[in-house]
Picture (spheres, each protein chain N blue to C red):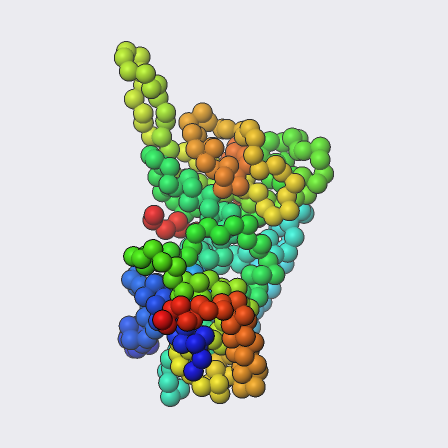
Length: 166
Length: 227
């Protein structure tokens, strides 16, 4: 029964969780790994996960917190020598510089927590209170992270937004 | 909503389509989940067994390996996290995989170890006189598969048609901070390894005779994705 319930959950929510993982990691393999890892943890405690009102929120929280702690662990351990081309290039089909690509690149340079907050706010459309519960901090800290991240982006991409929107 | 906020929404929406798809996510997650304890009375027994295993493992790990170089033994037999594979190791594996005629048939194994420790087992008593090199951390990668035998290229009688043969190779991959030079001549175990030049670009510096990696450290494995 547990396996059937779990598989049904993954069928329904798996794509969304993968997308969230991709948004916060920015890398294809890392996203797949993070989604698998979070779901594996959820499966280990499925009785507890299934008992909450919205299991997907619970798994989302696992995913985000694993990312934050996992990246911390990675940064303290192995030092990456080169990017092995894990990120998939986008075929825009147009020659012009895509402002979205530039913004995507800048997002990769943000601290993990700031990027996570932006993703949860502008991709998942969550409120600051909801984000705070997922990330495990206060709403004020969420606002502070978002504000700092936006200021950083704004400083690095003057005129980029207008280019995209025009 | 500001322009930057709108740009962010557009950026996320545009990139959402690149998220991983396909594959059996549920099955992969279940395979990675740790088995749950079934009986409460088993917990102390498991804890005791784990303590014994830790003691044995600490005793068995040779000097020269620092903590953190030994990964969880639970990952040693199966497919480990691809994302936890160091970039240099992955790049070297991908470079080799992409050579014509090369078929890597087994999961790629890798360890992180000091150069001197590995060299002692690979070629006894042949360590570098430079202590900085001996104490440098390096990655050792092992491939098992089939590699092309070059054969003679000139047509006519006596030319040998190219063929493949099974091979097991170990390659040392430079780690950060290692004082090796990342170019120059390489030791080639077999003349058929035509791809030495390409692997150099991936940070690979040396081919060595195979040794039992498990004697040096717990071996990590990963399955190379298909190109």
